[in-house]
Length: 231
Image (cartoon, rainbow, N blue to C red; front, side):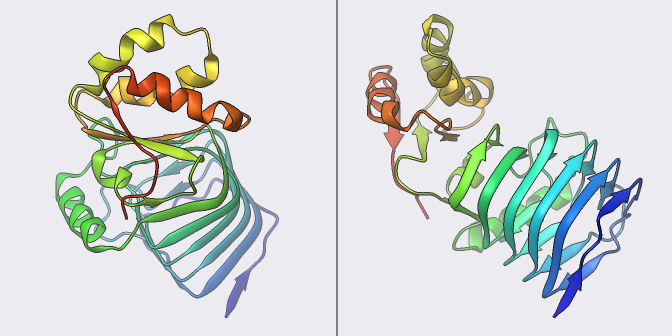
């Protein structure tokens, strides 16, 4: 087994050439780095690797592939988009903060139609893409119907909102509620619900006691709430 153990990495740009198998990457602060960026003929791949205590600052992520990897406490100082990254059978534990998941979101600056189709096929074949049951998820988004069907979570940790025109159904509630945690729960569905009939929403940390009430309020808007993983 390979162990990579460095304190800090700054201003490194990976053009899609990394290939790690059965490696441990721990206790690293990445600053102003880029991983597997668009325009590359190849994409970086990580297979059965473990990432522990990783922090990102001002980093960009393009098209890496993570297959059967484990992540324990991975945080970013600002929102890091992973819309073009492929996760297959990966698990998360500890803190997971400030990441946006979701394959093939056309709003991504790194969007590639060819890679989107390849990744979509791989995601559909996988039993699941990410498992967040043991993670404390904060300020993360999961965009798109495909990823919504491929996330494993514990009951009460998240919900899947289902139905047509989720944005139209939930926008009045978002605009009228004074509960910031309820607003955070449905904001993603309002932002992306015009395109997706499924939207995965994480219950904000500290709002677990409000969970049942939130579910009832959302259902009263004519939206189906799925409380268990689809995969």
